[in-house]
Length: 221
Image (cartoon, rainbow, N blue to C red; front, side, top):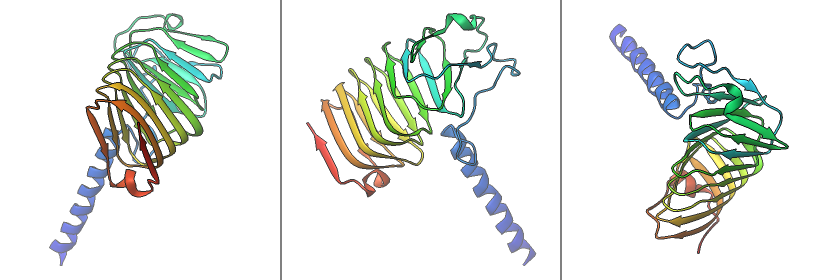
């Protein structure tokens, strides 16, 4: 009996470790919240998080941007060893945040309505937002990872060879996607009610069982 009890305990510990590792790979803590980047006390990162005024739009000229839900608006330059002054890699004009650096940048904010990727081959990681509407505009060869989003109306318009992937549990009521040639759309771990897809010569299209669970309409032009 003792051996059986020990075996059950070890099995439960192993299952817990596997679940935590799965969360970590998806950029999430064990409780489902988004992982936060190291702040200024981590010597591998030279830039601290800087407070921002509220904004509605992000215009991006960087290789990689992570945008995560938070209770306040902040920005940080996440490139290791970077000595770039804080004032040089972003600016705010009205309700628009401009990201000017070629380095990796992280933004924490309460909400964002529009993100424009103005540079080819950019990567966007977007995590845990819950709001009525959001729009992404991208150039060619861009990749967008959507983690734990709950958006009533999500719009994406991109150029050639773009890739969109959803991760972790989330939901869209209306998903509108417009892709140039050779685009890819992979919907996993997220429920979608209505899909309107405009694409030419797609490279990949996949909806898992969860994505199809509540699907009422799939329109493709």
